[in-house]
Every structure is written in C-alpha cells, then in structure tokens.
Length: 509
Image (cartoon, rainbow, N blue to C red; front, side, top):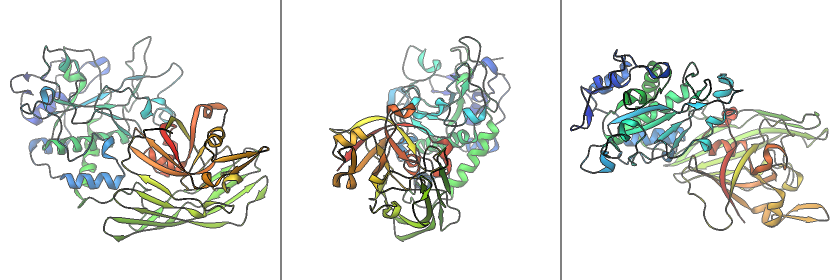
C-alpha cells in the first residue's frame, strides 16, 4: 500500500511510458490520504493522448479562437497561449520544460454551521467560490466550483507547491510541475478536515481542468502527464488531495473540450456575450422586479436580436427588449421597445444603449474590454462592488429620476456611486436638498477594472448607490447585472453565480 512512483533524478522524470506514469500518479486517493498500489484505470481519451504524446492535433490558433469564442481571457488561464511553459531548475533553458500536470484540492474547511448542500457550496453564496478570497502565492491556477479560473502564477513561472519539490536540498524540481487547485470544501472534528462532499467536484470544475490541461499541453508542445498531489507526496508529505476525484468525469470533459477546440478554424474576435439560441440569434433572459410592498415593479422580455459580421474581425449584435415599469402604484408609461447595439472588434465592445431612460436623458455608450489594464494614478479608488437591477427584489428595477429613470431591470450596462462621492466630484449638485445631475455627471463614464479576470468596463451613471446600510454599506459601487456578469466572465443567465467583487475604479468626466 502507498508505494511511491519511482523517480529518476538524472532523467528528471518518473519511470515508464507516459501512460504508465499516469496510471501510477493518478491512483485513487482515499479518505485521509491512503492510496492503493493498483494502477489507475485511465479514461480512454487520456490513454489515447498519452500513447502518442507528440501528436497534439490542436494548434495555438485553434486554442486562442476557442478561448475568444467562450469569452475567456488568456490572463485568467495561465497567460498567453502562444507562450511556452516554464523550464525546470528555476526556468533554466537547459532543463526540460514542465512535464507534469498536478491536480490538487484546496481543502477549504467550512464553518461549523455550514454543510455540503450543493445549493450552498456550488454557488456564489459560499465564500470559497469568490476569486478574491483565494490565497495568493499557492499555485498556478485556481478553479472554483462555478468553473471560474484565477491565474495565481502564470505557466511561465516556475513554482513549487508539493513536499516532493520542496524537501530535496536543491531547486532542480522547481518548474517541472504545473499546479492546479480545485476549490473543495471540507469538514471534520477539531482542526481536522477529512470529510469532503460527494461528488467531490462539479462538472464546471472538470470542464475547467480539461481546458487547462489542453492549454498547458499545447504550450509545452506535447501532452503532459497528469498527477495527484497526494500520490506525488507519498512518504515525503502528509496530504490527502484531491478527494473524490472522478477520472471518468474528467475524461468526458476532456473529450468534449477537444471536440470544441478542434472544430475552430481561425481566431475570431471575442464575443463575451450570452449563449446564442441559434447561429444568427442573440437573446438575454427575461426579468421581473418588484418592491416588497407591491407598489413598484418592472419587467423586460430580455434582448432578442441578430448577430452579423459586416467586415472581417467585426461582429455586431442588434437587439431589442420590451420594458414596462411602475412606481408608487402608477405606470411610467406604455410598454416600450428599447434597442441595444453591441459592436465588437479585436480591442473592445461598444454598447449603444441610448433608449433605456424613461425620462429625457439619452444614456451614454458603454464599453467592454476583454484584456484591460490595472488602473493607476490619481482618482483611482478600490473596494467592493455590489450589483443590482435585473431580478432585483429591493426596488422596482429603475434608477432615480435625477438620472433619467434608467430601466435597470434590463440588459443595460451602468453603474451607481454613493451620493457623497458624486457630490465631491461635481457629478451631482445639491441645492436646498434637491439633487440634480450636472452636465459633467450626465456625460461621465466610470472605468471599472476587475483584477481577477483582467476585464474592464466603462459605464455611465444610472443611479445613486450603494446604500449606506447593511452589506452594501462598505461597497464603493453598484453595477448592473449585465456589467458585473461581463466582469466576472458570466452571462445574464448565470445571475445565481454572480458575486460581490473587489474592483478598481475611476471617474472620467
């Protein structure tokens, strides 16, 4: 029992063929870290790949096209796919490139009153799924139970995360392994955490891990050998991860990922939009908001429209949604159709959304940037950003009259800031207790950068907020659902997965 896999220090690799190495390194990890000597039964797809590891059958162009189609920033999955991976021996050019694809779990212990209920641990309600809560300097890639990924260290960075790498009196193993932490809750008596959920991981995590395996292998130039942390550290460390890992489920995800990537032809501009109902159709979900007293509310049909490519590298979404709203028991007007046009090129998406105000204001455009830059210099503020609007149960789903009564229960892209900040910046004026949107405020754009995904948005002001009570008291901004979904690399269909996030922001007048 618990026999380590034989390793040849001179050759910087484990014994046997790639298939045999994987069969040893992927042996099932039992509760508290016991490992059988019986070789793992590999999924057929993994056996096929490792039997001929030099034949990738995937190009970097195809991989980049797939990521762009899915709206996945390369900064969140280990860095540019055109880069190599790190070398061993602290990235010594004469040492081999990283050979082993390590699989860990975070062993995140739940609080005493928390359970393994999937409706809790597999949603944004559990703090363990928040990218901003993950400890830095621990791995290369994190994958949450929602399928979100975070680059802790790029694949170009040689990094050690196991006792096998750390205990020898040398650093030649630094860079031989690429590390992947699957977020997993644990429970146990006292300071222990032997208990894990069943199933251990979500389909979204297996899909994310499959994509990372393809990315890492393509960047290396051949299929890497996957390995479990516990198996690698047998007799040199005390670990039990990953718990309840389903090789068959990962194999299925890998199969599907390869089919999707291999069908790509050329890299196309990122859409970062909702899943299409048909090749030329675009839709966002319907929505409904209502106050608790029933005196205010709003509805939207969701956007419905078409996608076209008027020129190479340019994609245009032209869609309409029908909205209604009432406040204090009175309708704001007849149901109206509002148009939204999203034009995407290789740099950004411009969102035309002038019609979303029930008042006379014409709402400024928004911009969505796939690969943004951190904000620096004067005027930058940082903090928690909450979200509101579509499906909101706190108000009727429209902004205040001072901002033109924007329909926030919709697919509009906008932001609200606290009244004090807007007064200080001259975006609002206060005359005898009457607030008015200044000309500066009407045209102002707020830049918001989310470091965890590398995405940036430029948004018009649509309301005053967040509130000064409850969880929103410590927030610096409130984002519409469409805006926060883009930043978090989700769609409006994934509202339940959305989280409050920590962002950088600044106002551009």
